[in-house]
Image 1 (cartoon, rainbow, N blue to C red):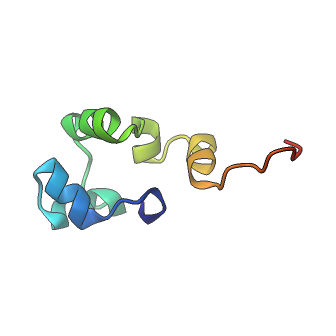
Image 2 (image 1 turned 90 degrees about the vertical axis):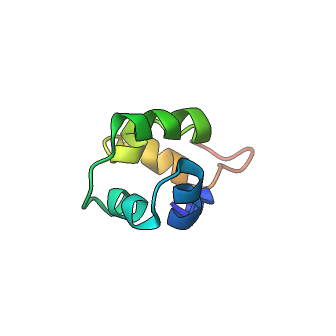
Length: 73
């Protein structure tokens, strides 16, 4: 999450939730609600599969540094 420039404290403030609630959702001890997932997509462009950790390829692509120009794929 930090690699995306997000912190639990900042995200909680933006979402109108407590830091402990957002931290619990991030670490998996609490479940994300549908409204949370919609907000994260609309406001941060984060698809629900990324937030829920269901799409390993998408997670790797979003977290890896961009490929240098002229490099092989």
